Amino acid sequence: MTATSHQDAHAEPSIFEPSNVIKSIFSVSLLSFSIALILGLIFTEQTVVSQKVHPAAAFIILLISVVWLANIEGSQGAIVGLAPIHNELYRESHPWAYKISLLCHKGDNLDRYLLGRQFSVVLIVFAINNCGGPIAGAQLWNLPDVVAQIFLGAGLAMIFFTVMVGQLSAEVNASLCMLDYINDPFSYFTAFASLALEFSGIIHFSYAIRYIFCYFAGKEVESKEPPRSPSQQLFFWGRVAFSFACLVFAFIVTLIALFEGKTTMWPVIPPGAGLVLFFVLMAVVGLFESTQIAYFAVSKLRQNERGTSIWAKKTCEILYAGKDGQPGVNLPGFMIGRQLFVVSCMFFVARVTSCDVKPGEETILGVSEGVQAFFNTGLLGALITTIVGSIAWRLAAATFPIFFLSILPSYIGLRVCLALNACGLLNGAWVL
Image (cartoon, rainbow, N blue to C red):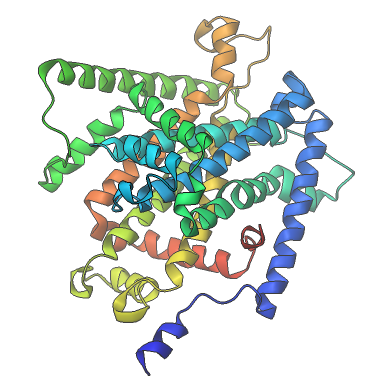
């Protein structure tokens, strides 16, 4: 087989192939039905925000959140992809992209941006869930029980909507048009907001986790900036301590709410099972976050450096079946299936961890109703998910990529993600 034909064998199939056309029609139909369901729930006041505030407010916040999520997801790929490119090359042609490059590619700002961006994504997913996700017992248009359970009870409508409209379509466009995608003031605001979130210190405990992993791996923490002065060290570690205190407090409030049945979790699930579900979902999110990082890290290694375990070999056979052992079509396929899994778990985590204490009811820890209203926003659950369910696993995988390549759950997750991608449920993202 020639080099050309070998490469063509692993090329991405055309979306105009008959099988992909059928998948796309099916996927777009599911997406359209999901959007109709979400709008129906909002305007019949069967979501958290539409019920407690107003349907119009829920609709507007949902729309803003999805547009913002799309910008964040697309901007990440563009900003990371442009890092090796000298920004003077596009200073005149793409002025906003140039400003974003100056902001995010200075010193360690790219790492800071990625941390803040991760928290932003979780916050927005939680906000989307509150605006468009059905409340317990929601029913619409006398749907058959099976359909209602799948699209409303299991949240499939919200998952399809968020993944296809707010994430995958944006990521595809940004990967092809990096400069054009971020060449606007909104993208600059998004990048600045992510850096501001990181600067606030609320997720700074992630840096302590990074130091711990590097210590056990015998590695130095890499930095593009000079060593911190004593005052900078005090400010940095002060924010780490603040972040740790926030994380502990978030766990305390969330666990109390779970045991007292004061979350938006389904009433049929007992508190003990809810606690187990919470940690299982966090582990699943962490697994897919870590394998994503591990697969890209290992792709840069030679074949004889990719581990010796049976699962590492099987995983590499699937992922790096392209030319000369490089990533073929299966790595993008894994990313698509992974996106569906991660967002699904985040929606479930949002339901499990979001407090639900109505005015007049006994509040958690006896706090005022104003503070309880803050708890009800789901921010505490978002903080736990970001640090414990996402960033910690990403840092672990970046430090020990071969380990995550070599374990059975990673191989199983890879197979499941490829199967999800093959069935075409998310082909609507390519249409968009």
